[in-house]
Amino acid sequence: MYIPRNMMMNELIQQQQFIAQFGFALLISEDLQITHLPLCLVADEGRYGTLYGHVAKANPHWKVLDNAVVKAVFNGPHSYISPSWYANGPAVPTWNYAAVHSKGRASLLDEAGLIHSIHLLVRQYEPALLANQELMPLDYQHKLANAIVGFKIEIDHIEGKHKLGQHKSTADQQGTAAGLARSQHIDAKALLAYMRQTGLGLGQ
Image (cartoon, rainbow, N blue to C red; front, top):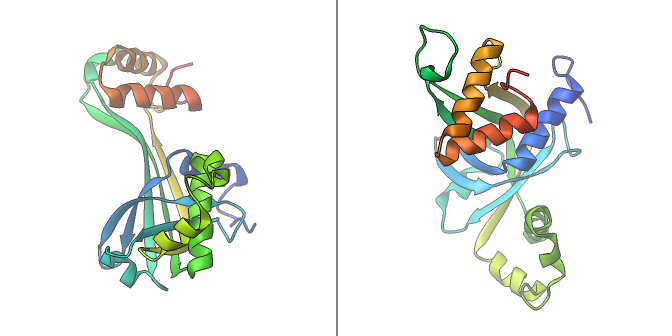
């Protein structure tokens, strides 16, 4: 895999792992059509990896995808951050989050490529289903393929953003983590779990 000089290998791997973990994306074309959909990354295919996905044939978005430059935005956990959680003031409310933006050229897939992209998706989230011919027989897959359109995106630019308060003082980070832990909001719990996973913004 080619890695540009301005990107470290570990940075690219982190962004690819983020996409694998938070694969539900916003697909945005140049005409500003937007589709919400899952995308699967083949990390070692192409410059930064290649994304595979599909849309319903009834969704007109696919008609502008072939050979088009598109963006895929992957949003991770996010939450409101109260200034009352900080050790010191003055302070204002903010919102912490993690996300990865990718850009590349899309191309439509033939039926074989479409079935392959579906298998990538199933293999990532429920691999045992591929062997269940009773529930998901191959002829049924090909039948359903008539109602969807597959595509891939060869990524040529990728960037991630972790705004998790890691620039704050140790005391402020610890206060934020404690505030998130007390919150009953599902977003706060998800963000704290991600911070613990990455070790960022905890004041440790």
